[in-house]
Structure formats: C-alpha cells, structure tokens
Image (cartoon, rainbow, N blue to C red; front, side, top):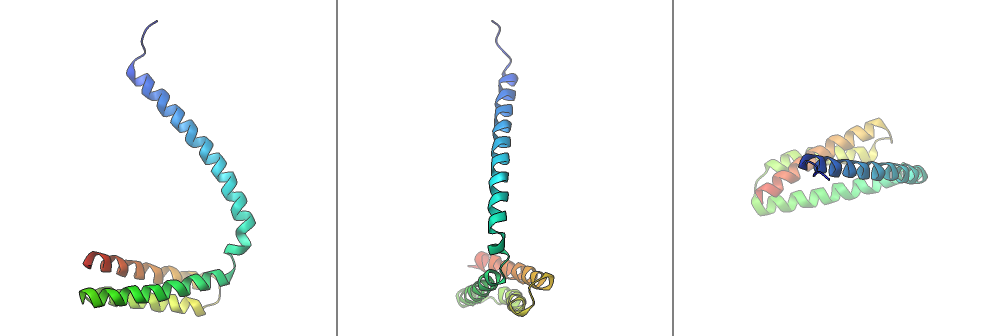
Length: 121
C-alpha cells in the first residue's frame, strides 16, 4: 500500500470540516427560522423597542457623563449628546422607518462617543 501525499490528508480534513459546517448551517437555519417565526410577534412589539431604547439612552448618558468626569475631555460628549437626542426623538416617533432611522443614527453616534471614552480612559 502506498502512502498518500500530505496535501490529500489536508484536503480530506478540510472537506470533513466543510461538511460539518454545512450540517450546522442547515440545522441552525431551521431552528433559527422556526424560533424567529414563533417569536416574531414578540420582537415586533413596539414596547420592547421603547423599553430597550429608553434603557440604552439612560445608560449612554450616565456612561458619557462619568467619562467626562474622569478624563475631562469634551469631544465624546459633543458626539454623544446629539446621538442621545436622536435616540430620545426615536422614543416619540411613530413606529416605522423614521423611528428606525433616528435610532440607527443615534446609536451610531453614541457608540462612537463610547469608543472615544474607552480609549481616553
């Protein structure tokens, strides 16, 4: 019996790994779609978004405030406060595209401000 070249052994391992990923992907897709379908009404509930956005706005304000108290740099606040204002505006916007746009823009600004805070501290 002749010995196989080393690259063929590597190809077999790669093929087995890829087959395993395929099985995981198929099972995970079925489970995920089934779960999201049955929980879709929960995630689409505007109250879930409002509570989450309110908590994120309050936590963001506290974190930005404590950051400026520690490092005395105002740039994160100048970026974060408009983001918090957009997030707060999203709380009062009708549920839909406008609310989503306000939320995404606001969260993006606040996330950038938090990254500045983290680097400065």
